[in-house]
Structures are given as structure tokens and as C-alpha cells.
Length: 81
Length: 248
Image (tube, rainbow over all chains, first blue to last red; front, side, top):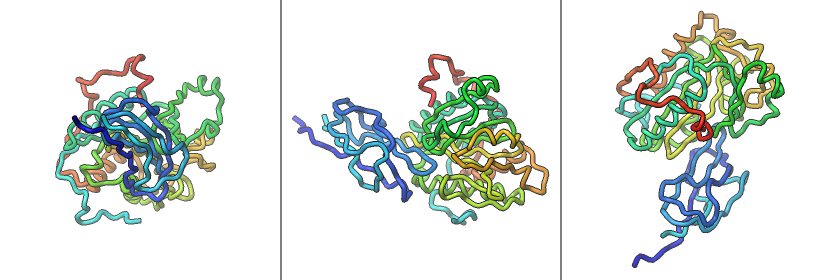
């Protein structure tokens, strides 16, 4: 049987020096499918939807709206199913 | 900022571009079409589309906008028939009206090897090149993405990226009624916007601007072929009231 693991949701490099967290689309405990948009971040002039890296359940939300972000920041954690 | 097209940009695409030149299009219809094209491009990342149109008068508010930037109150907005749409894109408040060219590229940014930040810079470069075509000296606005001429904003930039597919884009003032921009602080800028017609010594027409813009985008993003459509795709549904809450 496949072991479940915790997978971080990492912010990709958006090519902008200013990135802030905008909003979560899902709550902790919600089931998500790989590729679903789970959060939105904002750079000057653009919103960017962050996709779920794996299917599972959102276990943690580590950032809040208006938090400044850098590439590689762990936005949250998904418990893979 | 580099504004000249590079000889061989690394994101050059040999893919075709479907360009929809649609004339006047109300905002809800645009949203329905754009949503469908984003869905299609997300499923076929070798496809790319571009919508060029005008909008009837109305206001959109992006993530960086605020109701405080809209001076008329709700009854006044209703009397003017200016609908207000809060949309999930970057950028602030924008007043849409006839005499503008609205440009919505639906591009697969990952396939084109573009980050969101680089894409914004390239859109600004397209806008600068467009201004130059009409002998207007313009500069990019680093604080609020867009382009300025004569210290006033002339091009608005506001983009969203869903599943690495871009939507929304540019609004270029060609020859709109500039007095109306005193009522709306576009992108939070206290100065009213200007237009190509006001700043250019040349005759500026919407159709010419639209054609130049299509050429500039095709060249900068390296599309090898362009298919041009002048009609709303017949196979796509028009927006219905129950669909509008999901329209952004």
C-alpha cells in the first residue's frame, strides 16, 4: 500500500522582485486534485494562481494575505492520498 | 528595459496564433469567451489566442484597485450606465469606453518559457513599441505596470495567470473621451489618463492601432502564423445570467 506523505506547496519563481500573498481558494481539510488552483499570489500588474502539486488534503496554510513572499516559500502543505 | 525586439528571443514560438478582432464587445461576453479560450489553451498548450476589441463604457476593478478610486456614487454610476466588475486580475481600476483598444492575450506562458514577471515586461515593451509607431515618446511605469506619455498613463496593464495560461492584458487609449478619466483614478493614479490621439502628431484610428498591435504582438512573441477571425466563435455559448457569478 502506498504511504501517504506531506508535500509542500512551493512558490515558483515568478520573475518579479515583489510578490505578496493574495488569498487561499481552499480551507485546511479540503480535498484537492493535482493542478487545482489552491492559492493566488500577486505581483505588480498580475495575479498568479498556484496549483496543487499533488492530490490530497490541504493540511496546513502557512501564509496569510499580504505576506511578502520569495521563490521557494512554503505556502502550505498537502497530505497526499 | 529592453524595448527592441531581440533577434532571437528564447521564447520564440513556431506555434500559430488565433486572433479574434471583434469590434465592440460587452464585458460579460468577453469574460465568457476568454474563460473558454483559457480552458482550451490549458488543455492544448500548443494553442494561443488573442482577443482585440472595444468595450462599452464600464469599470473594472483589479486586485490592486479600490472603490475609493471611483468618484461617482452608485446612483451616478447607474445613471451613466457604467457597470462595475470586480475581476481577478492584477492592476487597479480601469475605466473602459469607446475609443480604446482592449487586448487580451491567452498564451501558455510555460510553453513560451515566460515567467509572469517577464510576460508583464514584454507586454509593456509591446505598448512602448506601439506608442513609438505613432511618434509618441512613452516610458514604462515601474510602480503601477502600464505606460506613461507626457507624465500621464496612456496604457493600462492588468493580467491574470491561471494554470500558467495568461488572460486579461492591455487597454490602450486611442481616442476616448479623456474628460471622463477625471471621474475614475485609473490604477490609483491621481492624474487623468491621456491618449495616442492627444500625444501623437499623426492621425490615429482605432483600426490602425489594432492592426499595429497585432503585428507587434505576433513579432515579439514569435508566432509563425496568425489566423484572424472577425466574428465571435459560433460554437461558443453567449454568457447567461446564471454563469456570470463565475465569470472572472
